[in-house]
Amino acid sequence: RPAGSRALTQAADYIQKKLTELGLTPQVQRWRDERFGLELQNLWVEIPGKDPEHGPILVIGAHYDTKLCDGHPNPAHNFRFVGAIDGAGGPAVLLELARHLKDRANVPNIWLVWFDGEENLDFDWNRENDHKALLGSRHFVETMAADKTRFPNGLSKRMKAMVLIDLVGDKNPKIDHDITSDPELNEIVREAAEAMGEGARVFEFELASGFKDDHLPFKNYGVRAVDLIDFRFRIPDHLVEGGRAEHDPRYARWWHSTEDTPDKMSPFGLKFFGDLVWLALPRIERRIYGSP
Image (cartoon, rainbow, N blue to C red; front, side, top):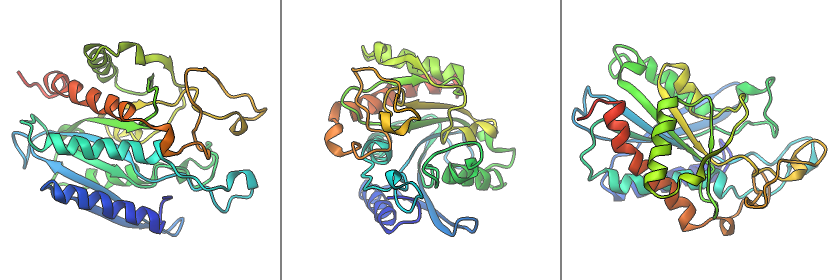
């Protein structure tokens, strides 16, 4: 389901169908990126809080595209990539959150967003091709920031926080500490995990300082953002120069490989992230949105 593919359009149709069945109104943001000749589409749904028209907004997002694994000069980068954990797990959690948030007395308006074009169009992601990734989240924040009807005083004045869910569903889930994330939101996530009795799964490992994901375009516009991601030790050896990736025997390695298939997932791995966001939400409302 890479960006611009028919398969991704089918996934978008499925997500919209499920949201409509819940009585929600999905919105679609379509555009063409002329640089790459791609037709892209972000999806989102707005679940009202205390003030639907002018009140603060919390974004919870995930990308639903998968890695392009076709047409690369290196034959090793061309294979059938299913993208179960990396591209389906996060969107699935968003759908389940929609099912419960629609009947909750939310303080902020909650926007659930499915981003297109997160994956880099080249197989490897580096400084030179950085403009080929995060296409959906960048477009979303740029167009919203330019919308003076929704955001007359700037994006961050109303869109106060963003929670990103990525690489979700492994049988033995964890969340790595992303140092680019907002410190207070990181602390809220830690507290929620401890309340679940799962504190050991959170922030044992740190991500490299240059790690990039769909939360960063929001952060660049002043929105407080946190990345809930399970990345460390997931890279297979063959994707690393020298064939020696970081390894911990507790964690399966499936990232950007033929191993990222549904049999690597579990209900527990998906539920872990959904429960974590659900338990973090009242803390976010109190400490970020000023709820009593």
